[in-house]
Length: 169
Image (cartoon, rainbow, N blue to C red; front, side):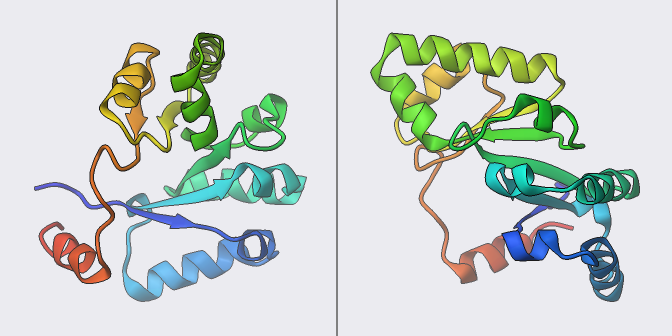
């Protein structure tokens, strides 16, 4: 059987709450959800605002089994120093980078170099906004780990997601 994993996108306000870690623990305990089934998505903008307190909370939560993805990377500050201090397992590259890379050889080379740097820092790399087979092949050629976008499939309706999740543990 496949183990279902849930991605939860965090808003600025939710993530920046001082009781965020405690609230998440209580919530998942109440519903009986295992921490390793949850991956929190934090945007590059939110992660750039994180204080040392919040960075420590991410580290604490990672030790408990939660995982984090930094999304929209390359859209804002793209702070590699900040990124290296976060206990995230994956970085999702902004869709605009993929689009530009599919239009320009120079942009594709820059994206490839960015993926190499992220891999050297032990991050998995997701290319977001992959909408064509050609873009999907380009991402594979420059060693992106995963792709998301319409080339993978159309978005599912809420009832389809619930039905799909019911098939897994």
